[in-house]
Length: 113
Image (cartoon, rainbow, N blue to C red; front, side):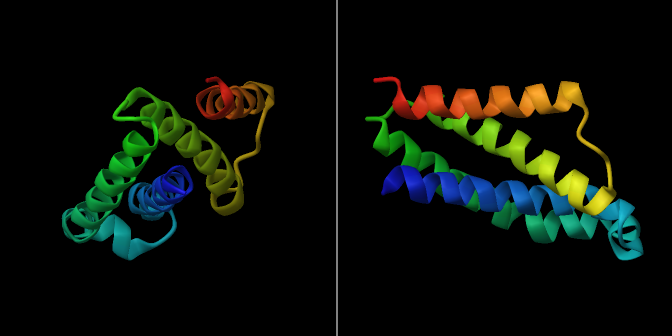
């Protein structure tokens, strides 16, 4: 369960990071208030990542590399989806291969014992 909770927290944080970083292209308020946005969201997002990292490290007996790869891969997958959904940027062959490699990286970390 720690792996699922940790990965879910990573996913939540990556979604929040996407909006925090790219909201400037969607909403004028984000563009006009980057410092305030970073102060308001940065601490909360950092806390989510710290707890997610701890949970995944506990699942893997204290190892932190698996969590890094899982978090990175979740970020790539969610970034691709959110950019397509909100920015209307298509997914080309290079991006699709990167997404598939990210899925493979997650599978390696979860299933390779």
